[in-house]
Length: 152
Image 1 (tube, rainbow, N blue to C red):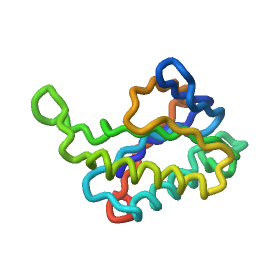
Image 2: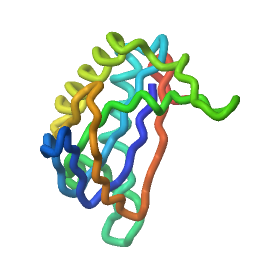
Image 3: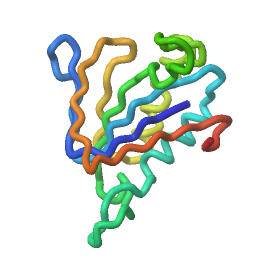
């Protein structure tokens, strides 16, 4: 399971020209599920995302978490995180979870983030063609991965 976490000043997602989710200061999380991913992986990543200390403190050091700053989260499903570009010129997606399983894990991940007492959680729609606006702050971006409920 992968989560591309971006510190943002704001973010939004639109489907068919309509904004379906928006946030202010916080995180945009691009979420991807791989073959064999479990609930344990989702729990690990949700906890890691909200507690990762990537927001600046008074001294300008990355020392505060999303919960510390009472930030917001925008979660977008993105199976292309599992795109394998090592061979040829067309990405392969054989490591991505099947859509039915990926959607279950995406829904679980969203609910786990909400359970962490995050101020606001906005989301895209699984499988939709989405337009995402990300105002990356820094820029600060981290790739988090979990396998069997632990980081890899």
